[in-house]
Image 1 (spheres, one colour):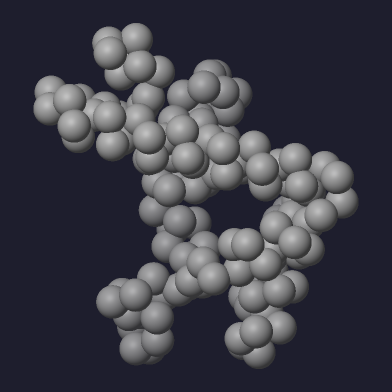
Image 2 (cartoon, rainbow, N blue to C red):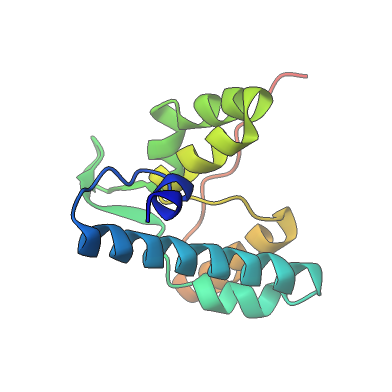
Length: 136
C-alpha cells in the first residue's frame, strides 16, 4: 500500500478508500495519456482530438474586466504557470510532470494540440487569441 502511495503524486490521505480511489484515478489518467500519445504517434491525432474536444476553452465563473469569460490560456499565462513548468523541466522532468498533473494539465505533441484546436475551433466558430510575437 505504501509503495503505491509513493508512486502517486499528491496522496497525503490516510483513509485507504480515498487513497485507492486516487490511485485508480491516477492509473486511468496515465492510461489515457499513453493512449493519446500512442494515437498521435500513429497518425491518429484527429481521432484523439475528437476524444478531448469537449474540454472547455474558457474558465467558468471567471469574468475579465470586459465581462467576458477569461480564456484558459490567458489565466495560465498570467499566473506564472508557463515559467514554473519551463524551470521545472530544466531541473527535474518528474517534478514538472507532477506539477502539470496538479494543474490538471499534460504534455502532448504539437500536432495533436493543433488537431484539437482545429476540432474545437470548427465547433465553436469563435476566434482564438493569436500567440503574441516574441522577440528574437
